Image 1 (cartoon, helix red, strand yellow):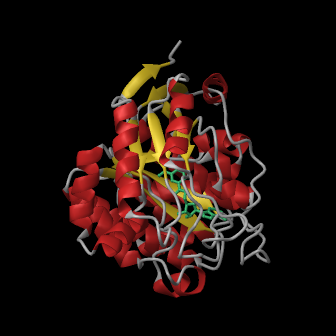
Image 2 (cartoon, helix red, strand yellow):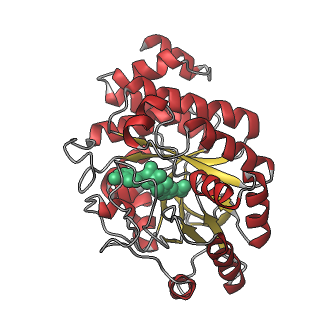
Length: 357
Ligand code: V47
C-alpha cells in the first residue's frame, strides 16, 4: 500500500497488480483518501448532476442476460413495447421540468424494425432539438448493424444525422469472456463493445462506460475491465464518464447471489477513480447504490451523482429499493452538505449553472 500511495501522490499510473491490491485492501479509508486526492487533482470540488429523464422503450430482448430482471421474451405477459407516440409523450412530459437530456436504452427486440429506432431518434430530436439524446448502448448499435447488415459505423453516422447526441455506457458488463460466457453468452463480446465505442468516438459521438460488478467476476477481472477502458481512452479520449454498476440480484437468474455491500460499492468507486487516471468523471448512479451512499461516495473519488432520472426500470426490476426520481433541489442540498459545489451540467459536461453560494 505504501508503494501505491507514493505512486498516487506522484501522479503515476497504477498497474494491474496495484488495482488488484487496492480492491483486496481491508483499509477502505486509505483507499478512499487516495481516491479523494486523485479526484481533487483531476476534477476539483465541483460535483455534477444533470436534469434528465430515462426512457426504456421496450423490455423485449433476445439476449436474456442472466443478471437482468428487466428483459422479457416477445409475447410474454410482462413484455412491453412503447409506441413512438408513447415515447414522445414521456419525453413531452419532462420537457416542462427543464430536462436537458433524454437517456434512452432498451432491449434488443428481435422483430422491431430498425426504422422504429431511427424514427424515435428523429422524432425526439424534432420535439426539442435542444434536448440532448443519449441513446443506445454499444450492444444495441451492434444489434442494429446485424439487423440491417451494415457496419456499425454506417448505423452510427445515420443515428448521428438523425439527432443522436451521445451514447450511454451500458452493455459493457465485464469484458472477460469467461464471465460473459456465464452471465451474457448471447451478448456481443467485450472486444466488440470496445470496437463499437472506438468507432463511435471516431465519428464524433462521445460516450460513457460502465462495469457491472458484484456477480460472478473475480477482482482481477474487474481490474482487467478498467485497464481495457483506460487503454481505449488513451487512444480516443471519447469517454465522458465511468459508472460502476452494482449488481442487484432479485428476480434474476443469479438470484442466489448476495448482491454488493456498501463497503464494496465505495471501494469499487474509489478504485475506479485511481485506475482510470484519464477519465475526468467518475459517476455514482444513486439509483443503484442509494442516495445516501452516493453522497458519501463524494469523499471516495466520485464527482458526478447522475441526475433526476424520473423513471427507472432496469434496477427496480431487480429489486432496487431506491426512489425512481429525485428533485433537483434535493440533489443540490445533498452535494452541499457533503461540502462540495453543486454544478448542473449538460450531457457533455458543459456547466449550466454553478450553485456556488
Ligand atoms: O448494461 C442490468 C445493468 C445497464 C442489472 O451511461 C444491472 O450514464 C444492476 O448502463 N443490477 C444499463 N445493474 C444501465 C446503464 C446506465 C445507467 C445509468 C447511467 C448510465 C450512463 C448507464 O444496467 C446494463 C447492465 O450492465 N444492469 N441488470 C441488475 N440486475
